[in-house]
Amino acid sequence: MYEERDPIDEAQWNWLAPLMPGGCRGKRGPRADNRRLIDAIFWMVRSGGRWRDLPERFGDYRTVKRRHC
Image (cartoon, rainbow, N blue to C red; front, side, top):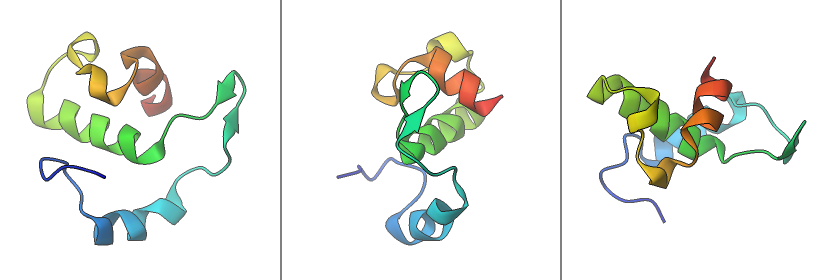
């Protein structure tokens, strides 16, 4: 499902997943995938890029930025 270039492996995700906010709906609709959010934040940290530079595979940069903040 996830590619090797992703920053966390299955064991790490299994440890981290219970710490993430639950639920499948947010205020504005379906909640974004938590693992994709973590991958996007790690991408930002590694690249030092701007939010607008976030690759589309992580979803809308505004959603990632809002959930990060």
